[in-house]
Image (cartoon, rainbow, N blue to C red):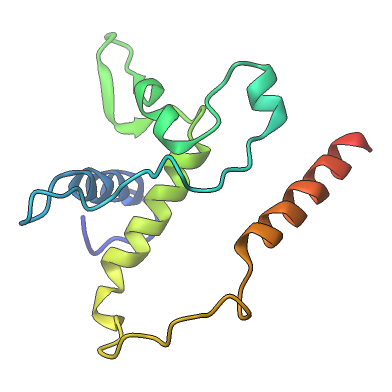
Length: 134
């Protein structure tokens, strides 16, 4: 499945890649991590409806479509409460398929004058709240 990019099998291929990334690497560390300290913008609608507001919260509800005989259809997950997981699947699939493009030289480090993540996140959140008021 690794070679499939689009079409039949691409969802399962992406799920397999995420499963692999959740496993520990050679040093015993998970390849994919959710950081509690990472900035988050939560969708207010999802919060009010008591739905998962992030990828890590979506795992328990990630299930496969039920077949006519009542067994899970392991070829197709239910398309619900999976925005964060889809994001992770797309990102991990991209990295997996393009890892040979990784630069051999470490990129130049950005300084505080080059990027201000906190200010950018605050602006995105302000814009989001304004759009909700409309």
